Length: 191
Image (tube, rainbow, N blue to C red; front, side, top):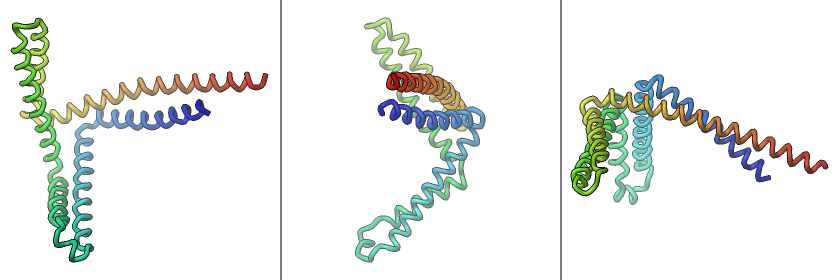
């Protein structure tokens, strides 16, 4: 019974691993299209939630409308969704700039920490190198957000592919071992 459950879990993991592998292939081969598709999906979600909020407000009783902000929230969300649909690259640039700022700030802290460690430990050089590399990456993302996002997604795709292949190998090995164990148990029960 436990082995059957484990086998069932491994098969469901197999399906999710194949999905991640396919996602990785798409991201590695077509990162620009992936960015636009993801942005479009997010835009549709904003628009849908906004429309839902507006309809919810209009259908609610007058007493509830007095204290509800659903209409305003709905208009804002619908407007953001519509804006993103019309300007797909805007969200990509915004997210990349946000990531660039975050990486830059974190790297500046790492550089400061390295300089504080300078007289205390020999390890300050490693922190300084990682901080400078991170700061360079952050600045690159700020200067060229769309290309950085494309490169970032391509790297993510490659990581997904490598991780999924490793996981597939592991799942196949586990399923083979489970099949052999089940055959052994069945053979022992027959004798």
